[in-house]
Image (cartoon, rainbow, N blue to C red; front, side, top):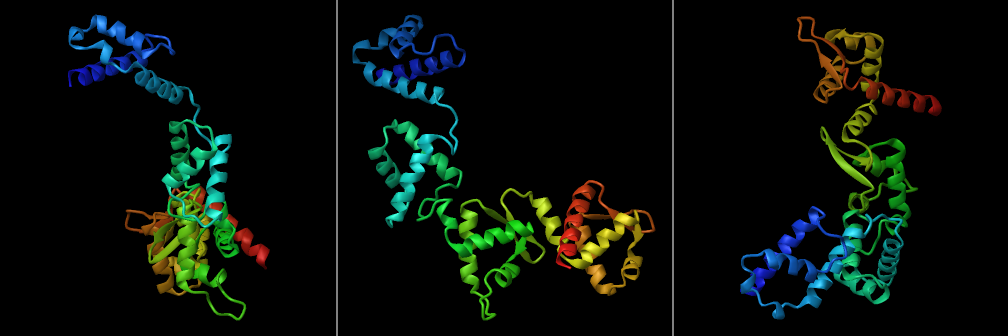
Length: 304
């Protein structure tokens, strides 16, 4: 016990020396140990002969490797090799597990254990590989239907579940594909970090993974024609009385009021606190709202 506690003490001191760069990298544990032992008041209680210096120096080699290894990236050759091994393994019908991938890769690649484990967890944490799956981030898009779902979401910048089912899963005879089928494909795309989902009112909305949630909400709300009319009106007139909007738009009052409440709830438009109760575009979101509105206008023109 005294030996173990002594080793722990010296290794802790060694870590501090590392942090403040008081010795050159490459010094062995033994040299540092002897320096510290000389300073330590408890050195007499440590039996140097019993210390396994080979094991300790090996541990230092691993630590030094971690210090000098550059950050991982998908372009790194060893990362690409592990991906190839994983895909080959899954193509043969084997489900991916960390242990199985480690054993396969360890038999093929000449990579230190710590480095190989780092690569595997890098791929898992970045959704390139998924434990328990037979797909990688690339092979998951081999399925044409799944690829079409992703392309539709990217092209339209957002899409809710019912719209995807109608636009992407509709069969040639006009019948819709099953909801369960769509749920499965959407979950696969989310698991591999291609898309994410948010709630907007009663709708489940899917966005490209790179899109900010706030922009996704604006995109979804402006898919509605009456919402676009309200916002467009407020870009022309700085503020308008809530009660006058439905007249200016020549739309049903109930429909306009419902949408106004939504736009206010999601902070796209604001209400003045004075007695006029006029509404106006939120200055903090005005630029994003106008940019997205203009994209919808261009799309409408192209479809005419």
